[in-house]
Picture 1 (cartoon, rainbow, N blue to C red):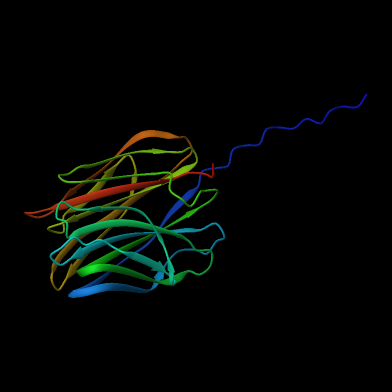
Picture 2 (picture 1 turned 180 degrees about the horizontal axis):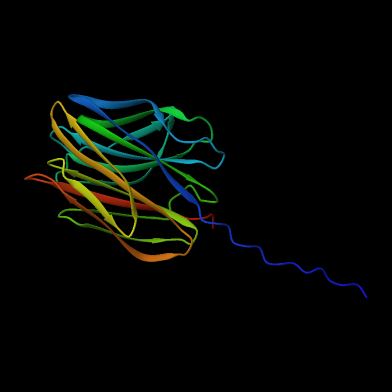
Length: 231
């Protein structure tokens, strides 16, 4: 009598990983529409690497929409964008699969004149769909509430921007990774901050909050983007 082979069920893939890599700032003039971060640190090269760029801009006198971000000359895709309560302040997140290289020129373009630009880089690795599964944005008085659902074995990256003074930033229900302050020749650019975590179990309507303080006239905004495994 022959015996049927016994197969054990495949274990689910482990969670994707998310790694904070670097931060940088470029101060410009009131007539600048392009910011170049030369040889920006984009993390450890890997075949499964997704480079995520958080961009904070301070424009001059009008809504500062970011029209494009390129990494090593290749256009990144926009995951989310939000203006502060002052529309001159803009926060956005972009992503691009980049398998090779540890440094690249990152170019941020805005159709309106801008004073300054902050850049924060993350890497996502693992069995992750490069297209985000969900995002949430919020602005106004602190705290900004960013409720988002995150798939099992997925990751999330949150970002916050507060202007009007150096101030502070803090997060709840996600781990803060950086606070980048920048003072330009045209005044205080404030804080661009971020947070991230990987999740083995699915998170339904996770209430991530971004709290901030600044000077006499603060303007704040926050966003969170989630990624999950391929469907």
